[in-house]
Image 1 (tube, one colour):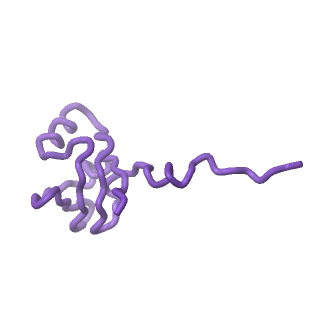
Image 2 (cartoon, rainbow, N blue to C red):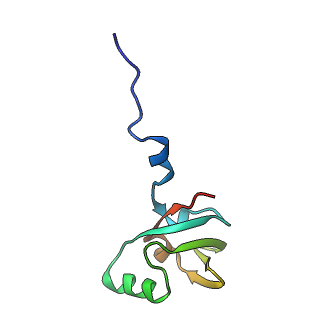
Length: 92
């Protein structure tokens, strides 16, 4: 007897998939998972307060870049930086 193929990811795993911050929807709460790129970029992002585990909200998109909020602080990021920040959705 042949069975139907099953998915390799469970629903709980699919909720925790990472994607670049540049792909996050407006007004979405996300958590930083990984900072990709070199040491200089990781240091710069850390100086801005964008550490692993930080929760951000995408406030506005401008061209290729975007503005994110960390608490009451607003941070403008270029498109290149935003693609190197991997995030996951924060459950509501």
